[in-house]
Length: 124
Image (cartoon, rainbow, N blue to C red):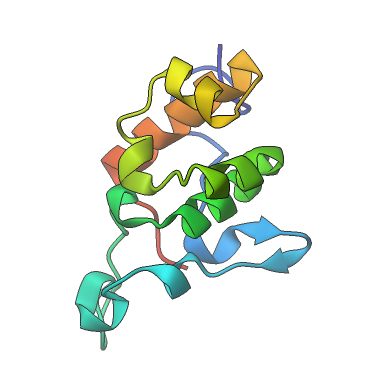
């Protein structure tokens, strides 16, 4: 198994907010998070904390999909809409119903979601 980086454990598919790319341009996932100015990512100064996966909007999840090489499902994510908190509850069958047709992609996405749920989505 393994979603793209070699079998066992965290690896090179690490996605930071400032690293997520779509169509050759950097996307800032923080732009659509409600409450960012209220301190969700640290607000004023100091070290920024990772964003909880559950706080991501469907647009941010679509950008995340693009960043991990599953951008072909970004439109389906926006149609559903599939938000971070929804992704945490998804089964492979849910993702299939949402339009992620290829089983290995569903499993890779669920692996990535589990990792991001544990570690948070790193700020840029």
